[in-house]
Length: 224
Image (cartoon, rainbow, N blue to C red):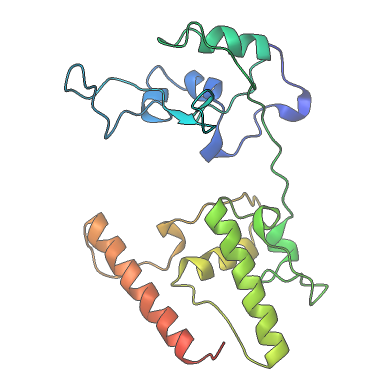
């Protein structure tokens, strides 16, 4: 395995770790990660398998497949050797090897207000991954929040997404003072807690209902 460059060492987003890093954490870590078999039944046995590797079709002719969740920093020769150890992939031909990408983002708590606008340069917005949100929906949502704020400034309206909504909570997270800021996916932990002590699914339903009420109230006060 080729040694990584100095700038590549151990600086990973926790939700997108290379498979070799996961494997080092314990013999069953991968089984609870990208190899998790939950919801899948082996048609030959009628039982849930111990572990699975999921393949996602990459082209219309079904000649290329992607190994789902197998981000890796292994050298290309090692990728070929290791992944051919997987049953069924012994003769696999690799059209493209995995590479790690750098996730660049600004120090959002220092430079961004909660509308994704630069504190020192009003009218300039940063949204998406560069703002420190992680995920496709989160990136799109941050752009929506920035666009609504810009629309509000042009029309004389105040548009502020409530912190009880995930869009508002994400905007608050990236702009909140934090000495060790890291990108974040949307999650229920960002929302103000609910006082009731409820089971997880019921609690999440309450979060959802509260969020919808807040958004409806905001929508009634705005005419887009």
